[in-house]
Image 1 (cartoon, rainbow, N blue to C red):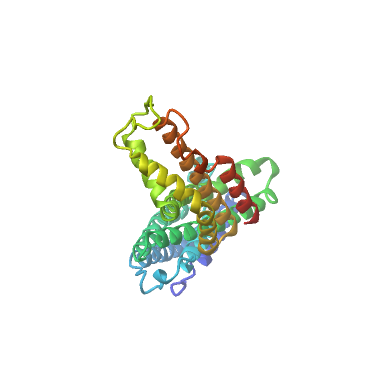
Image 2 (tube, rainbow, N blue to C red):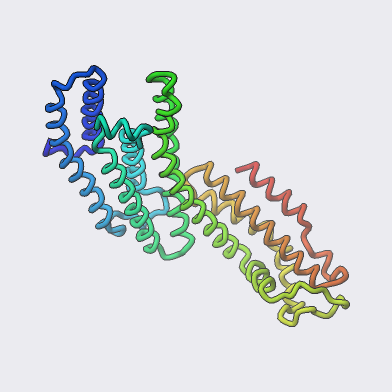
Length: 334
């Protein structure tokens, strides 16, 4: 026991001991209770030591030594954490009957394990953040974080489905809903945590990618929206806001008309090359192209506010329906 470094194996032993303790209470016999107490007394320090060792290992992890900064692909640390977290969540779910558990003391390790795994989750996120800072470009750092958090989420969701299936096909039918809710509670908490992180860095990637492929247009829209007062002008040649240069508007329209298809193709290639998960990549591609369409719609609104009548370069303005048709073509082919 004291030479064992298998945390999942020790968790299984702890569950067997807990099941044995529950069985003797069910039968109304306490003859073996000292035996199970002794087993728990042996397991408790070893479980605690291994949990602390995992925490300390994550705290001291050096992304350079681990080779994390050499690739944006999912790192094995993320997969190992996800597998361990899923195993511990399945072995030590929060109880749906706390009063009964406290009275009969079936699972005395659960709270400590869940608390330690929550700390380990935070430490793994810190490792990922440290690794991201070692990349030279923000886009690479963001892709790295998206790939790893998506990898963790994929594993957690797969194990959650398996845990749900196990509960549904075993036990007393009338108790299955309560058992399933308890068994999946910890999975749901971890999934919600990493979902928020993934959404944050997806949004970051969208803005970085658009700033790379449409830098002048995006910068102009943000600057114009920050300075314009939204009023129109009685002349088609005068600017209602002196901070908006009409020559810049015309130049942005013509630059976009000349390069927008090639830029969308670049977005498509970047997404294909960046993301390991096909489904995740498809969702991000849709998000980038949808955000592009929104930015261009805002650009058109700025033109309408500045010009009361159609501007001289109206024929150069790309129609929104043309952009939407191009977006649909790439989304279908992905």
